[in-house]
Image (cartoon, rainbow, N blue to C red; front, side, top):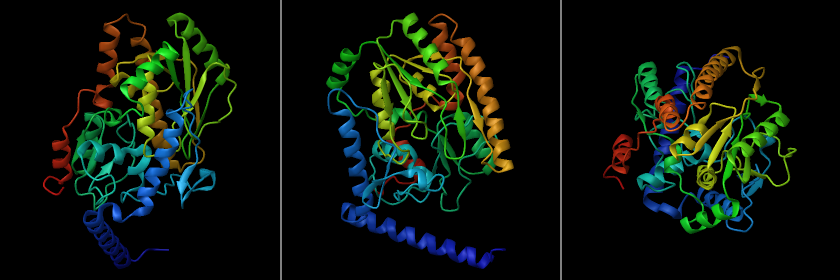
Length: 370
């Protein structure tokens, strides 16, 4: 069926009016309105509090999502579903990126929607995409690296600003004193983050080979503890050594997801992975030692359309190329290794970038409105 352009325009006008009204009421009434969204923030806060404030630490959050006043299993939901309505674009809520940004800039966590699209992860190939431009997002995009920002400007002819790694805006769930005490309990700790699945792409690998490789790293580098961090889409029950600590930051709708990840990174001395993913740049941003796990991951693209599958295959191929470069760099001695790693990933994560709150407000067109 061909959609009537006039009907499309009418829907856009109504949607714009609705969100304008939402923004006005949130600005005027603050926490006296949008109770569902405020309650969701509190519910998720309770989940991470329970995980990190007791002893021993239990950082293995369940993968349920908060929806309609209770936690629910997300498996029956459509791909990329999020119940959050803080922002107009659903993906802006993923992993709490909107919360990180607003908290840093000093704006209300639930207020008028941001006039911008937030890129919630890493893309290393020019043709890869998250969200296409939206008419209401007149301030364009915020992304991590300068190369990605340039691609977005050139492809879409819209503003795009690189803000550096999202992890720099996250806040640990533990105080400095608690972090230091936990580091003493665990000793020298290795965080493991492997290639993970996402809604329409399943990734798999030889888990036992990964365990063997990690044991070798532990022995070679004198690690005393291992934290195995799985993605919420990955299997919960894994045959890990009993003394290793399983961890999960919960469903991607968790607004404190990045705070949980920042906490684990602060507690660990090194990160081991077999994937050129967002976590690598976050670890480097926090000055953690990287280790490469030489166990290949495979991905199933059969659930994607042909165009999207081609896009993801090209992205995967470029990540494999960068992985090969990284493996070679990690064989170098320090400090040359650290310098080379940062040079390799700077274009994608923008490690040297940290805009001030004032700059962010200017990019968002919010200066003088708070």
